[in-house]
Image (cartoon, rainbow, N blue to C red):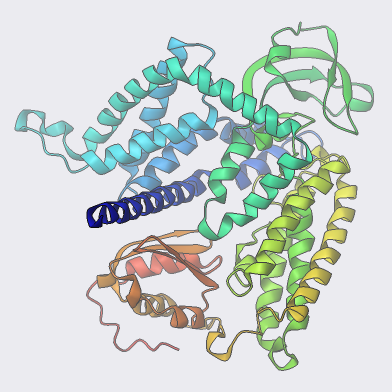
Length: 538
């Protein structure tokens, strides 16, 4: 009996570790995805400003379109670098080699294969792990030229060749399954929209929302670009994106009526000028490509990010004791304005996710509800970076019923304000300014000498001797520690951290907001032998 019990306990422990490892790897992959995704703002800016309804500069529009068109390749480059041990450029080169070999091999075996951004992800994974395995490999003297980092793209290419051969055979089945899933989600209406919106926010604390978003925005659903002769009420429309099966039947020079799931432009009758070979995948790609039915999984974020969360910030400010409002007001205003203007919400969300998880659960549900309501009223909108004012105004000309979306936003601002106000007071929930005295958060001084804040964080984490890796992802430090118990969470929060997320036995995420990348860089620059004993901690 004892042996059986021991075996069961061991099995449970093993399964737990495996689950943690899978979670940790998924988070690492999500972080790596942020490098290529960070190119989207400039791509969207160039693409929109260059179009005829704005600045009408064709080369600018083509430049932005080139980034979107090569996003799978950028995924391969970025993920390879993100997964490599030291972020070396050799991993990025290997990512490009792996992507070209993988996709060329797969499409040669089966011309119908379209791996889209998945091809970039697979190539990046192959290249990243190839770099980690072979970047320090030694070879016999007569092959020494190909040793070390020069070996990495060679091995990545060979592994990608095998993966491409396998993909050419099995990917059509996977592709059919993904298409079926995309169809099921897109036709499930309110259910699919609500589930996606809720999960999008619910996964933020563990950093896995990027993985979820990548499929919806870059992989779900496909369309093929065509050039049309804009005329009549649609004179400004020169590009559409339609079902690839339909595109194959179109005849250049003939007039055709195109139908879309759009309450404003359900039908567009125009002359086909050119059927391109460009295929767009995902809600974001299709939106900018000219699919007048795309934007279903982006529009609902605008009411939440521009109005809902600022409304929540106002509620938390008024709920704070009068004597602490001046202390929390500046921080709440800055993160609320950041959410409204840019759509970057994590600094605000992490101000209450750990203090009052119930409020964050409400926020996740409201986000799902926002997607449902936005689509119920027939609005469609999209973004190149996030659902803030900048993207809202920039992409107004591509949107469907954007003014209605503004009204929905005002309604969600009121919803957030009144529900957060009621919940905080009725259930005595913690929020900024209402923490226990020993949990109060003090923001770091803005006039601190360069690198001083980084030294404080480093000391609170146990110094370089306790850190095996330092990384960052927009708003959070991603750390691997030898002994996580040494890290002083109370001090980290007093230094300005919005929260701390523990993953596995040795991984720690410290939520800092937009300063995370800067602090991480400064921490890395601090010498391993530097004495931190004189660094003062709060």
